[in-house]
Length: 460
Ligand code: TRP
Image (cartoon, rainbow, N blue to C red; front, side, top):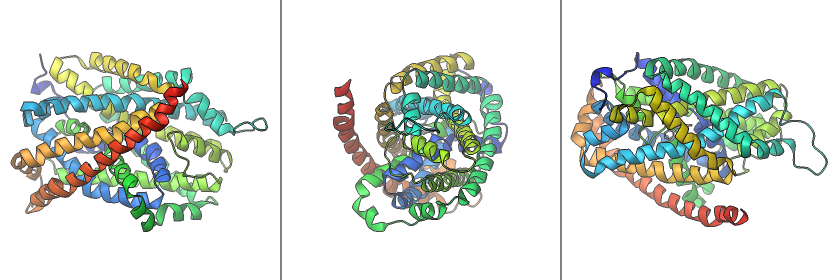
């Protein structure tokens, strides 16, 4: 049994769709992942490459997903099956799988964030420690990032996500993002103004904003996959979120304008995050280059202890990050939920609760050690999303170009040669960059598996 067209929900307004897509895009990718990638990949050099990829690769790839979603009006699996057929149908299955992988660690990190709201309020991560002990901020992170604490907050995060998604497209997702997205933008703008007043602001801006091209040339092999992976991750591309969200579009909108607004908003939030995080770090003499998933938690927490109004800023900061994480997580799970509803005739509540429960189980091993976050994260961002992107792009612009162009042109007044510019951008340069990034990403993952991860296994 499957849902008929008449039963399928749509966005109530165009702005509802844009906000939902922005809510999906803006998340831990911007606030947690972005600064730690910037720190790991050499500051402004990474920023330049990342910005170039967002515009030249991310935006055209988003159009690819929109076209498939709106043309078919179906969940990812159904959409790809209808669009292409044959062996392509497995691509939809790959998307659903990627959704599970990302959600299971995303929710654990989301749990850390919620825990940090408490930690900020009760001063859990500031204060003195016994002499010789690691600083409080580091100690706090190592306590709450693994074990029962982490598991509990991972569960809590999933429960909230399930609650919102179970309410449906309009009453749950759309209402949720209409509240959360404006709040995120307002609070972050205020925090950036505050960060501007801090003593370390000038050093931070120069670290963050003046690129060293020599560094870029010397390190392109790690910067390229990191930037491509981050561009896909932050724009929620490569696993059908934008297919699913565009499938709830009822009329012929101008997909180009919608996509451009989403890209601009999302990039703005990432840039704003840098303008908040780096001044806070530099003001407290914390190095932004400390690698790893915990970097931003430990260093921001350490820095908050040493700046004026640290408690208030901490609660606001982590509270906002939690909202951003939730509005992204609902899009990730919605891909799988809409698939279960459309294809198997589940009701929304059963589908959401079952899938949410499964994600909770899959995420549980991530709470064993923070190296597990890297295990999932490198796999997801530098391999799976790029693979999903390459396959989908090939399908749409090489195999079904005419349908794609036809669909894209709807709702765009004077289309002219825009269609062929888009087509050829995606056909050659975008695909080349994605393939090169994927190869480098696979090499990096192999190094991780035989290095850090093997060491972790050896110590078990
Ligand atoms: N874009 C979100 C972020 O930056 C995360 C996310 C939501 C995502 N949906 C996705 C990442 C789909 C990849 C694919 O936090």
